[in-house]
Length: 203
Image 1: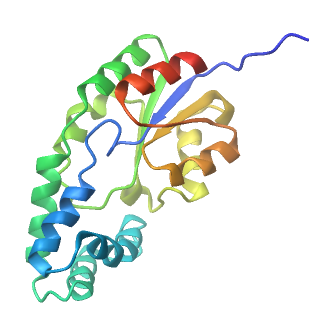
Image 2: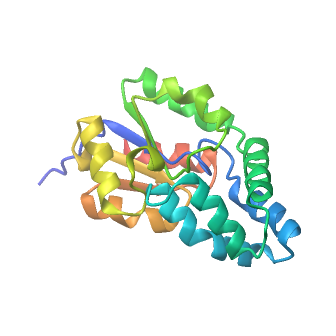
């Protein structure tokens, strides 16, 4: 019996850590110096509030106030300033991945971004490439986040394709199983060269 190869119609990219550099480690490192905690502790203390903010369960003022309190700081504006400044400095585009997106687009594939972000991130790098993509889904804008199933269903509906017609790419392994369970093919991003090779095998 001949193997039927499914037709891929859409490729969904994570933003930070795939299309652009992952800024989070630099953010935690910078804030750690301000609050005299190690960066892993900063990450763990910020995480529950960041999740809530990405899902629009708390307002921006409450987010920064809660973060400051969790980090034993009395200056939420200082924490916010460090966060936004470091984010802007380190979320540089990965030019090889951007070129790959352009090639896919030229070959009539739908391309999309699925990214967990918070309101207020000065994401200049995203603005530079946003028009390349057919669909851009940002967690804060839709009140959902990875790895919750609902955001994967949402982007598939926006792309007007079936899950088994999609490839989902992310640099965090925890975000892949929901896509796999829906029927998407997935790639754990390690480098632009590795990504291109794996895409060639799947398409």
